[in-house]
Amino acid sequence: MQVSAPLRRIAPVLALLAASACGEGGSGRLEGSVTELLDLRYQRTEAALAEGTLAVSFVNAQGSGQDVVLKVSARVADMLPDDEYAGSLDIDLAEALDDGSQRGSVDRSVLDEPVRPFPLLQRGNLFVKSLPKNSGDRVSGEFSVTFTNGTDVYSGRTLFSRFEATAP
Image 1: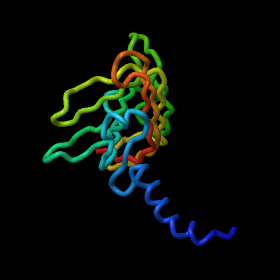
Image 2: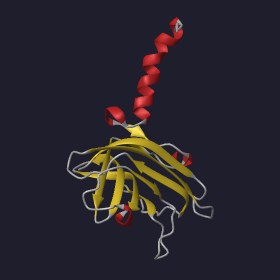
Image 3: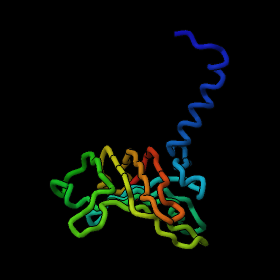
Image 4: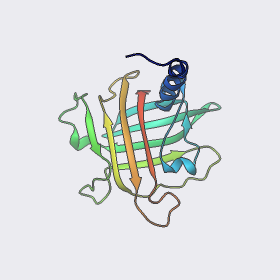
């Protein structure tokens, strides 16, 4: 296939934008209608599995600490066949659990910003190709959520992203 000269000139720019959107190269930005209300740019992505909860955090350095721009969490203990399982998981974040809570949640913790909980999830999915077991493990995947309708500022809004995360 022959590629035109103008397309050859913009192809590297398009590739750079695509990599940036996915969080490669040290920075990225989450997507969805919540981005109209919040700055959702981040520097790195971390994934951790602890006490039966898988969490993917989109993080910025903040002095000697960090801002968690967004954290997508899911209770997955009942989904793991054994303690050694490190394979993929496809998680319905909006699933109602036996105790009445949802399997997944979305949180944010940013310095000098009031804590405002996100609404419950109308729909949500978190997919990871592997689970983080050791520090430095790489985890790739994607998530998407739609918040329930209501009176909250985030009601009915969406968030989504693909990611490459590292276990801290």
